Amino acid sequence: MLSRSILTGRFVAARQIVKPFTVAVRFNSSVSDDKYKHPLFTPKEEFEGYVKVKDYFLQKRDPYLKYDDQQNRRNLDEPMHEYHDFLDMWSPDHYDFISDKTALKWFLNYFLAIAGFAGTIYVFDLWPERPNAPRSYPEGLAKDLGALPGEEKLYTARVDRFA
Image (tube, rainbow, N blue to C red):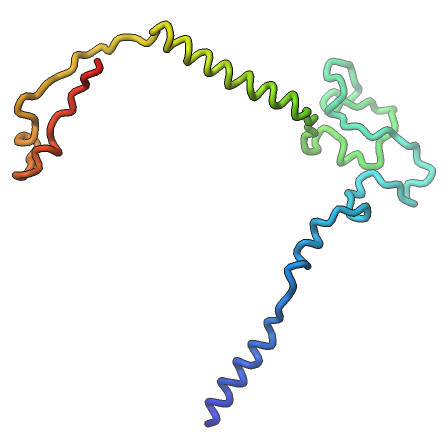
């Protein structure tokens, strides 16, 4: 009796620990709101009085110009951006996205080029001749390959009639 009450009490306690939650809580993370935007370039009190430098990635600078620090594309006398770590040459690459129209144009050009190449080979019959002649095995290779009686069809030669 005591063991039964202990077991049921333990299961009741375990049931109370697991509390259900609503699914709507999960979707709160994907809400588009201004307060959730990336705070990368927000003005702060700690940068008061500091020169406001234009936000641009140093990867976008001309690599052929002469800089004091050629590897980082930076001159030593220019003011450093307050978020220099996010904008320097060692930050993750910044990609310029293209429009859907341009992407679709290049996508179609690629597949049209492949289709044109394949069509040219097909129309002008440009594939080479086979360097071998098809063989025929009148008795097949079933006996030589160790086929059991009734398995001869599995071991028959498949003659290529299109060569």
